[in-house]
Length: 57
Image (cartoon, rainbow, N blue to C red; front, side, top):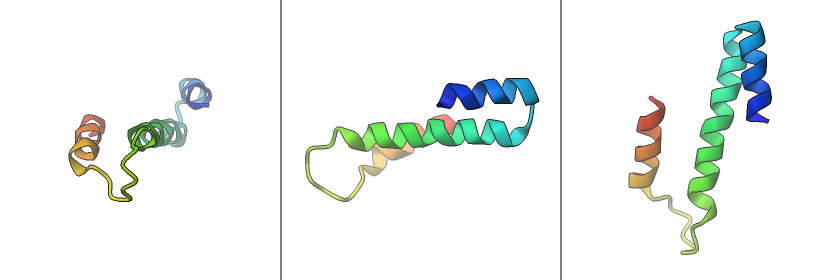
């Protein structure tokens, strides 16, 4: 799905298409970060969260 938005952005050059693509990429990173957690805690690991967020900025 991410690839679809990327191709659409390359075709149109529309900033909205790029933002959809980036939004999906960030969402996937969040899902990957929390999917492997077996601790049962509802609280996120803020150090890990800040690490991937700083990569995006």
